[in-house]
Image (tube, rainbow, N blue to C red; front, side, top):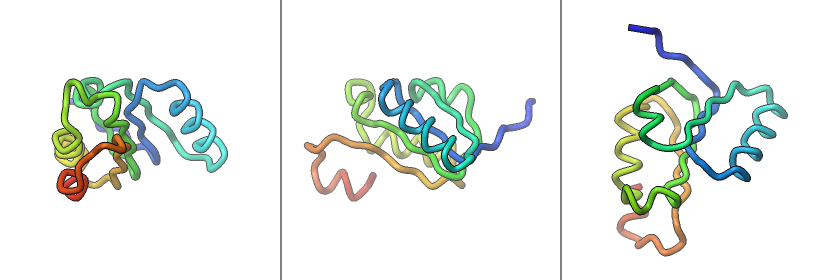
Length: 97
């Protein structure tokens, strides 16, 4: 079994603008960066990240934000998780996420 890689910042998104912004921030602050296009890619190739940001908006058809967040917490228990969610998210769901 291969050793799990460690990064300062991890991002799960397929949005080019968000990827570009995260690459800029990582370069500006000398953070190591890992980008996954979707949750399935992350689960197939998990890594330890100090901070893990995930765009739950683009995955709404496949996963509910609460399921997405729960999966991230399971696969990255030591990461500080940031979830980008839709404005229409209900308050009780937002509290869980």
